Amino acid sequence: MKVYFLGTGTSQGIPIIGVDHPVCKSTDAKDKRLRVSIWITWGEHSYVIDCGPDFRQQMLSCGCRKLDAILFTHEHADHTAGLDDIRPYNFRQGEIPVYAHQRVIDNLKRRFDYVFETVNKYPGAPSVKTIEVVNNIPFAVGDKIAIPVNVMHGDLQVFGYRIDDFAYLTDVKTIDKMEVEKLKNLKVLVVNALRVEPHDTHFNLQEALDFIELVKPEVAYLTHISHVLGFHEEVQKQLPENVFLAYDNLEITI
Ligand SMILES: [Zn+2]
Image 1 (cartoon, rainbow, N blue to C red):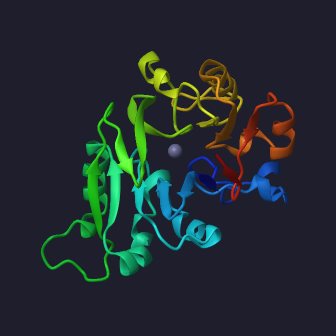
Image 2: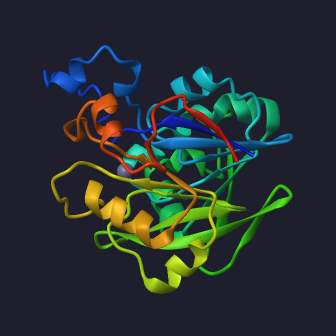
Image 3: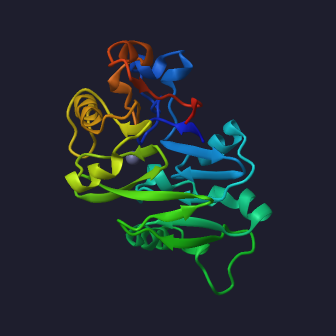
């Protein structure tokens, strides 16, 4: 299985429009972060987790020609705003399956009403087939199984997903013990780490490192990163041996 980091930035991306912070001005490609998303492939199978506002650019960068489904974590715009740009896949493949919590499906129906139009739908509009994700009910993704992992983003429920020995959790602030049980014996854990300062709805760096200590994956990658976390190269040097800062266009094999 290959995991390609399509974007590793927090909601505004890095650089932020109009901000002169040194990290926003950095010439290191690893300091440029699109909105957070990953592309998971194995054999002929191809899935993305989330579909943010940089989706088009990300699909062009990674060269994804076929998309089996989108797995959504939650409805926030940095994770969903690219939904209109699935149309090239629709034109080649037909409707694209979308897996999400029922609350997220309802939210998408409001925000992208034209996608769900049943009467006189514009022929070029995106088309999706929605599949509700329910906690504790694993579901098939190709010939593998995805296990939903329930986490909390402040007061908002968010799904992470485990597939084989890989788990992707973003926008976590708290997680129940029962859910941590689902994360045993991971080869690779991806988890969010916003910045050094605490934040109300996202793990800061220390919380992410403590969580990694608890879960004990072989290796962990940090994502959903703010410019104020610092330069990629400098932050990486301070991390434990098995913890890495993810960066855009990084590809790992599991
Ligand atoms: Zn987010």
